Length: 130
Image (cartoon, rainbow, N blue to C red; front, top):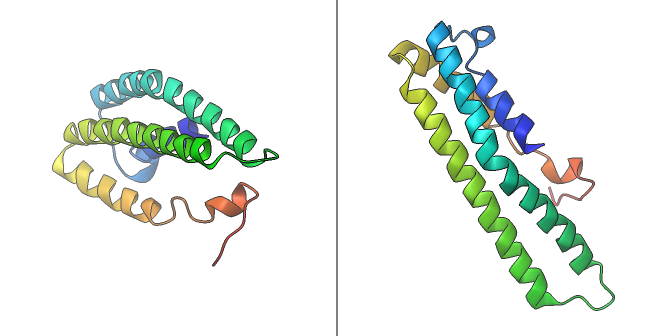
C-alpha cells in the first residue's frame, strides 16, 4: 500500500498534472524513486510484521499491555523513519524543479494533501468516532 502511495505522490509531478518535466528531470526522478523504494521497502515490511504482531497481542486471551505499548512505539518509530525518508526524497526532487514547476507542484500537493488519510480507519475495517 505505502509504496503505491509514494509512487502516486511522485506521479503528481508528471506532465498529466501540468508540471512539464524535462527529459533529464524525468530520468533523475525515476532513478530517485527506485532508490527510495530500496530504502523504504524493508521498513514497510517491518511495519507490516509489527501490525500483524499487534493484532496477535491485542487478541490474546490475556493481553500484555507492556508488549502492546512497546509494539505501538515500534510501529510509530518505523512510520516516522519512513516519513523522514520520503520527505527528504520529495525535497530533493523539489529542489531540481524550476520556480514555475515548484509552484505547480506545491499547488497539486496542497490539493491532494488535504485528503490524505481521510477515512483511513473505515477502509481498514475499523471504526470512526466522527
